[in-house]
Length: 359
Image (tube, rainbow, N blue to C red):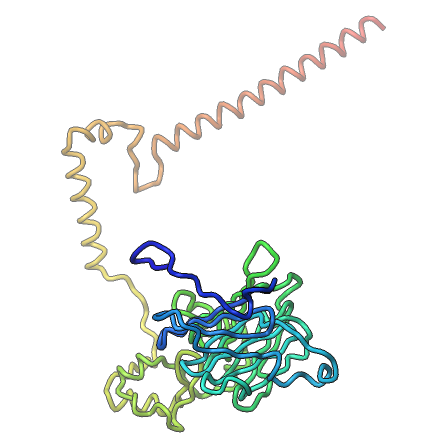
């Protein structure tokens, strides 16, 4: 669809699927070259130049890609279920039998990276993060290193079947859309820091990991902004700083020496100063209160309030008319209870006397 013109453009048709019952399962767009890739259920990937609508790329994953060991001797016809671009020249595809292939667009037959998830289930989503690959399946997610192929982390995504995964760029936050009303959210600090709109997750991680304080005992955590303010940005990448989440750990001794050199160290006093109230501030506050009261009493709207004896309050003995009124009410209630008890006692004695006369 052309949003500027508000109409659909000419449809892109695949000759492989034109006369069959198969269809597309996923697509990917490379904006640098204006290439639109489409993956299909027959295990093929086709690419078109959106500027000219020409078919410029064709890849048969099912035919040329190496099959897993347990499927090498059997007939294999699997669909490409998802795809994702790593950069303008490399893209990854996930198949229905749980294998991830990474190709170079200049070599459209042999993949240069193959990873078998060992689950014979369709790959739902694929994302790239630095030198790692993230792949989501129906009930789990696997993250491995692109250079070594070793598993970085793997975890279950819950009892509900996962349909799609989204990874927030340059962070460790993952979200899974599954067969449940709520979105499943996972945060992996080792992948990266939390996004700016939920940066509180970093502090929660520090609170939940008590070993961090013992591991970095004698070190102080400072952010990148604090480094630049102290003029220590040149220490980034050296042995004096240890990168951790959104900041660095620096030796407490080195940090104190730098602050002493800059003259911004605040040394605590040996004797704690008694927090006695400032007499001048107290008197000034009372004078302000009196001035505000006099200003309010001079107003005709509040003149009746100051003349009302019920609202008067004595600051000397703490008694006031309101307290006396309240005490009078309590005294009346107590007196009523005593009268009721006296009446009940009289009635009881009267009944007793009447019963004695009849006997």
